[in-house]
Length: 149
Image 1 (tube, rainbow, N blue to C red):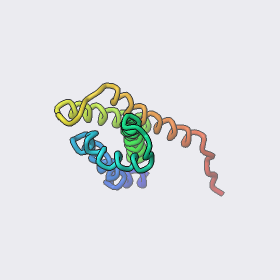
Image 2 (image 1 turned 90 degrees about the vertical axis):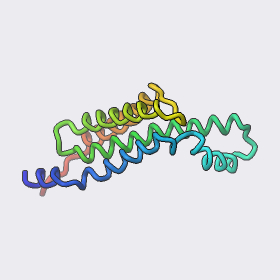
Image 3 (image 1 turned 120 degrees about the vertical axis):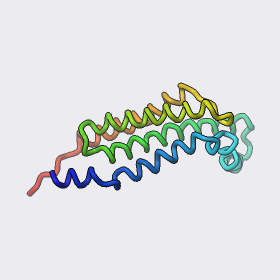
């Protein structure tokens, strides 16, 4: 019981979660706009696919950006689970936090001229968080228990 209270009472399990949440919300500003990411993704794709038409490069760039939505919220859910794992229902708390951050991020983007806000991005973000939560559940549920000998 003492280990539970001492672990839960420290900031260490929450620090990565707080930092990653700040990164996610910062990417929701003009820093993560398509014009900004095209400065390094575009040249890389043109180097990787020198004969590809411009439309193909734009499509792949858009898919990379959508995958980034999925991945950043999967990481957010994983870090949230790590921070909340000593609470009751940590997977549910992790998903709810990731969904709340997704809603806040898209709401904030609705006020930014460089960004567009979309319910589909919220759904994609929540799908990434849900995928991470399912993986966490499967690993924790079916992991062989360590017997003490």
